[in-house]
Length: 493
Image (tube, rainbow, N blue to C red; front, side, top):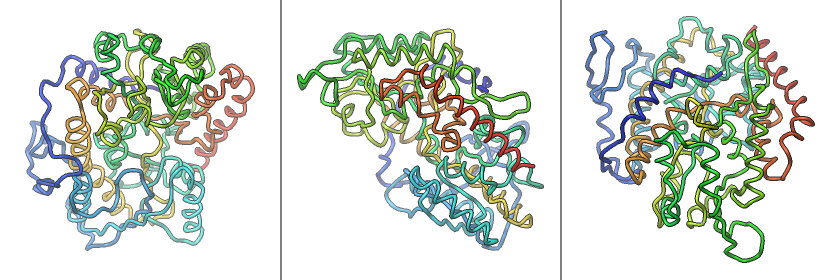
């Protein structure tokens, strides 16, 4: 199910360009005035909605004081800072520090973060840790982990249905929560985890395409920015831009990372091209359960995969995970997450830009920018006592609300859009990419669905046909998706 409510916002965004790039302190520089976010200056609108001095909406949480009671959070070794940090010379860390201080002050709680391994290699270990605590009658109030680790906890019945908590302070209609993750992972009316501005990793992990602007200019090729503006940034135009980029620089007769390449991306990034073409993996049946989306196994997906396979055969595209070739100026395009400009491209010698993954064709209404897995999904353990719900749900709501006002503006506006953006157009594109971000349910529940989300990339990497995968492997995946749906509905009941 796609969220069409974003279309008006995107249309308005595309009417204007940012005219001036502000100058900010470096993201790894002095924390400066980050502390001023504690001031809490408030204004009101005609509807008595509260806003802070920067125009960000305030939450409606009442005054609370739990007398420094501990709220225990089992977190993970996230790729970027998110949980417990020290105040120092890193602007992002300082924003997280003050977010936590604000939450503790407002709620009258003490946040206790326990970090454990939870990344892709440790999903099972994370679930086992939570399961052992549950079986022993113990709990952490909040579970905050890598997408697939949290999903495993949900399918194992270890997380609470967030839609059914009595007297909850969680308000998922507020702008600091992602509606998309709820819409794409809920089974019926039931959902077990959430994310949004509470996760500092979220806005940094949206798939997009970075491009070498100098390489395109040298070849007098049209700028991707121009194609986006004219609604012509499509799969076909992307492939056409890269038709004559390849050069066998090491003269070994084989395309490899030492050559000049067109489009490069890891096997797990290439599926984002399909999603960008409006090809989701999971759909809903009449009861709201998960089923395989017909598009994923239909003519449109086969057509896209055939074009991509041909592009690899003809040295227009290449499957490789390393960003080194792009950093060295040897690749025209690289499929990666939106924060690459912030974290990986600061010292490159060429001008770069970024755009969303292309549309299938110009008739497609909007872009779709898939969220990469290493973000944090938040849940509440199933055995947290009801007597703690006010404190726990209030704290989680406050963490996300304060993140919306304190951490997201620093990461996105100050660092990603302005410090690392090379032009006004790139700043605009980062906003477009963020506003078209969406969650792929099968990416989150990858282990339960036999990693179907990665299979387009694996087929491209191994020169296998998509039709062959559909015929040989997809029936088993479809059965797994239905079983997962039944399991999640069973947990809810």
